[in-house]
Image (cartoon, rainbow, N blue to C red; front, side, top):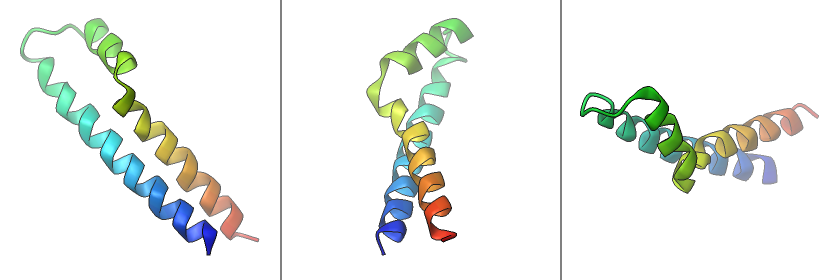
Length: 66
């Protein structure tokens, strides 16, 4: 049962982090360079939700195989 909860939490984190990252992509046409964009993504803590969510989902799927 905990694997399903971890999968759902990971999915939620991935969606939240991906949405914020895509939203920040709108700054690129406004004059931000790609290097500045990557530095912005690196400095924003909510953008770390995407890789954390992917890791949670992957762990849940690995443990579900047993």
